[in-house]
Amino acid sequence: MNAAPASPESSPEPSADPAAPVANTVVVTARAAKVMRGQLEKRGTPSGAIRFGIRGGGCTGYSYMFQFEDGEPRSSDHVVEAFGVRVYVDPKSMVLVKGTRLDFETGIRGHGFRFENPNVDDSCGCGESISF
Image (tube, rainbow, N blue to C red; front, side, top):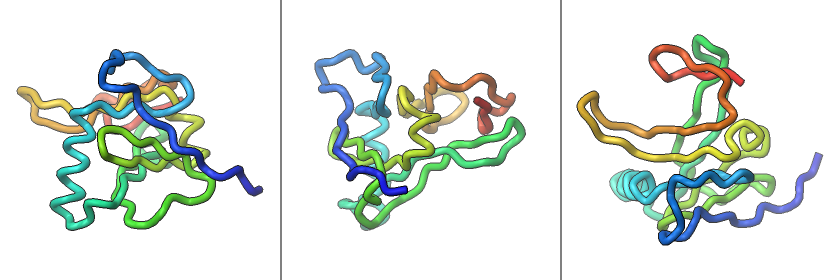
């Protein structure tokens, strides 16, 4: 099945409430974008992107997929541009991650990306696996 070409979507402007969900896309916070940009630069691919999605696996059925993407987006990808970073999401994953807020946290337990996904029904104790 051929999908319509992807149209760029963007996270809210910096003046918008960064915690406000956007129902039909993925929101990338400034903190998350800064870390992504830094990792892309460290890797030597500052013009690259991040592919975000869902894959089968984990103790509750699904897990998040987060990887570097050096090429152009696929014609069916949703493209989210925020704070100088591009995030590609395939259409099947978008059904499960739309409305998700991608953030980066640092704290007493360490640091890492945090996915606030309104579509999740349950998650495992370690937080690495989710179900819908």
